[in-house]
Image (cartoon, rainbow, N blue to C red; front, side, top):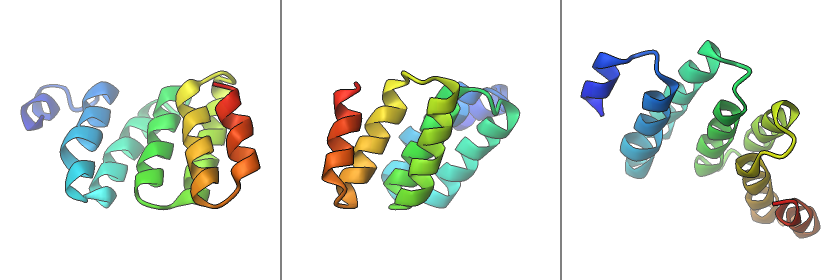
Length: 107
C-alpha cells in the first residue's frame, strides 16, 4: 500500500484502500480518517468519498459525525447504499432502532 501511495498519492482509491486495509484494522483511526479526508478534500462532490468518511467515523465510534457525513453523501447520491447502511448501523448503535430500520429498508 505504501508503494501505491508513492506512485499515486492523489488517487482517492489508493487513499481509501490505505485507510480501510492498512490503518483501520490496526486501530489507527486518526490516520485513516486523515487519509479519507485528503481524498474528500480533493473531490468533495464524490458521494463515495463522503460514505468512506462516514464509515471511518463509524469505526471510530464518532456516531454523530458519521451520520453527518453519510447525510452529506446522500445529498450527492440519494440512493447510495453505503451511506444508507452506515446510517442504519449508526442509528442502531445509538439505540435509534426505528430510524435504523427505516434506513435499512431503503437498501
